[in-house]
Image (tube, rainbow, N blue to C red):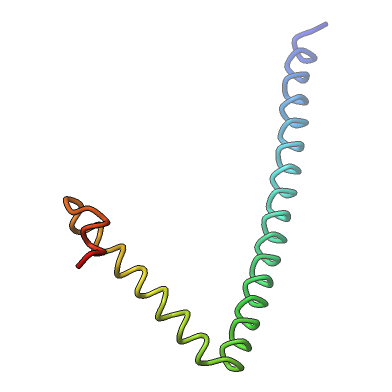
Length: 92
């Protein structure tokens, strides 16, 4: 084997590796784009369904929102005053 053949082997291996890495990256980009599109479609479907439900049942939606807001307010108050016990706060 002469020097030129020894130099060509690593170059061809590097080219093969570069080709494989490029192909893998292209596949990953395509998969990410497809997942992104699927996620956006799912979010749009959920948002549309929620919008339809709220339009059909506005008072139920207001009640749910009020309940969630009250729960979050209670938890925020509890976390702001950790020295008090939960039962002490409920007795008031």
